[in-house]
Length: 278
Image 1: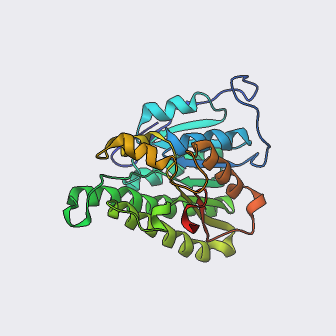
Image 2: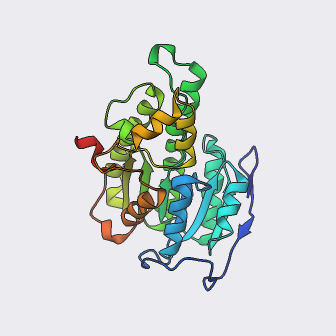
């Protein structure tokens, strides 16, 4: 689906039968008859989560700035729509939610996940374009998805929102000040929204992953001064050794999206192998 400059949309629906044997068998069916809106759904945590939510029965709107990536993921998922959207464009975000409501009739789950890490730089040397680009996506983009997503969710009678924060919001880390700043803001938005909409049936939580081995993290490693040393160090970065995978995050998002978590709202849940409590 392409979103025009004025926020208009032309749907490009990609659907497959639920009997398609290429789909993995579901873990369970906690999310049947629900509709999920997943940003950054073309790769990494977004892709893994879109697949997991679909396995549990949800219809899925895969939202990504990369149309090809979104459509590639959507081709493997039943009851799915691929949307090309830049979440830093509020008109495009609003149009994407309108299209999701039109196609599926509700928005019950939002995984507000699109984000970037930016370049690694000491704070006093931080490039201003780097600062602005990170905060435009991780800050303003996160807000736009909440703003228009909550409006859509109110029409649907409530639901669950999961924002992607980071351990960088909960601990001090060097040379990623824009990322840390933006992800700390995610935690604040999560708390505010949870309190504002709890009485209207909307739960809002955040996850705070440690470094997960995604394409984004791979690029972050390769941009470091010594990628090989960085990679080796991160193998033992968390008390639980090794690299967590996107699927490990997806399972937590699916839990928070389900009624199993109906009394959980306003929290930022680390997925970090014990990193923040060392």
